[in-house]
Every structure is written in C-alpha cells, then in structure tokens.
Image (cartoon, rainbow, N blue to C red; front, side, top):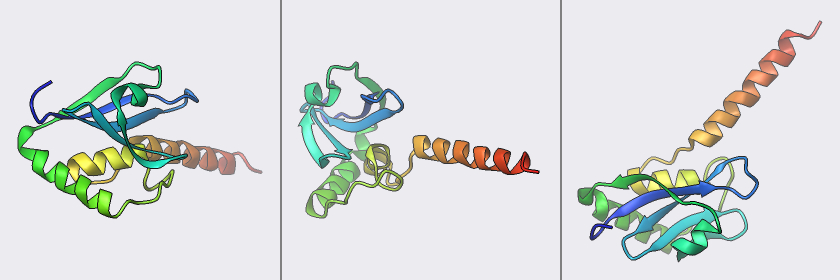
Length: 124
C-alpha cells in the first residue's frame, strides 16, 4: 500500500444478496456503516468477516485531505444508518467523492418499479 492511500473496499454481505462497502486507510483501519452498529472503525480482518475483500478503487493522493475532512466531520456528527439513504455504499461514496449514492439501492428501486409497472400492465 502507498503512504496515505485510501481505498474503497467491498465484500459480499452475509445474506449473499448484496455487497458491503467500506473505506480503508493506509493504517489498515476500515470505516463502514452497518445496520446493527451504525458507523464504526474496524480492522480489515474484521471488515472481511471471513470473506474476500475487493479493492473497488483507490482514491487519488490529492483527494486525501478532502476525504479526511469529511471523515472528521462525520466523527463529530455521525449519521444514523438508513437502508435507502445512508447505508454502507452511500457512506463510502460520500466519504470518497462527496456525493452519497448507491447503485445497489438504485438498482433495487428500478427492479421494484418495473415489477409494479408489469403488475399494473397485466391487470384486466
């Protein structure tokens, strides 16, 4: 790992239906959000929870100060976990890019929307 490297990391969720995201710093600490515990700081090994960890992307060194400033802000004012608007993926995206977004939630909402449209279309 490079000095000051910050990485978005992921692993399969235990339910097998989605991916769990976190942000790993060069000291091996991972910050993430869980439904059960909310915001937490843990080791990479605890984050892995027996699963393979994948590096999703590495954050450019020149963005490290912004990422650390967002992390400091969140540590002062932690947000409550919300499966739709503030989950592990929205946290990781917000922390590393400034924009909270979740492709998993967007995809699930799209699928549910298509199911509703299909159900309405086949009604007599």
